[in-house]
Image (cartoon, rainbow, N blue to C red; front, top):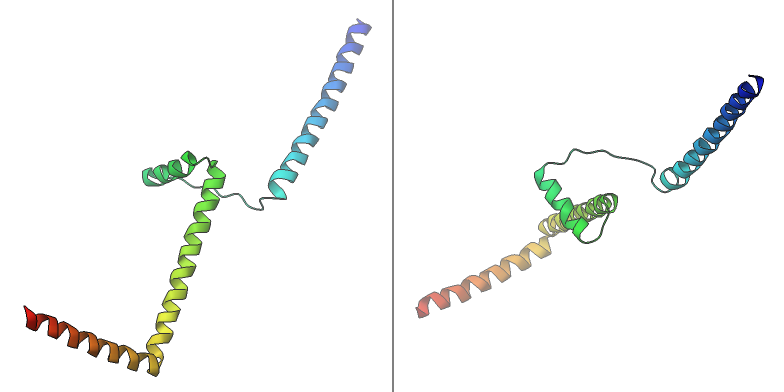
Length: 120
């Protein structure tokens, strides 16, 4: 009976040591791959259109995470370009020289359009 109890105690101790090693390895894996490289996790519920869009990117060989990061990057870049273009247009609209040039070009285009409509 003592031998059985000792064997059980040893098995429990070995199991605890094994569990600690597995837990430590799991923590190390998490720290190396998620904490170091990816500082934040985001969850989202996808509607049907989003599922279809994700499928397009996955068909290009991207994982879900890669596809979502790529989509976020592309969407942000598009917004940055639109914002820069809007700022440039606002600056041109406030520049008296640009406004004068636009009026001159418009008058020329109107004259050309009038000449074309006279031909018909």
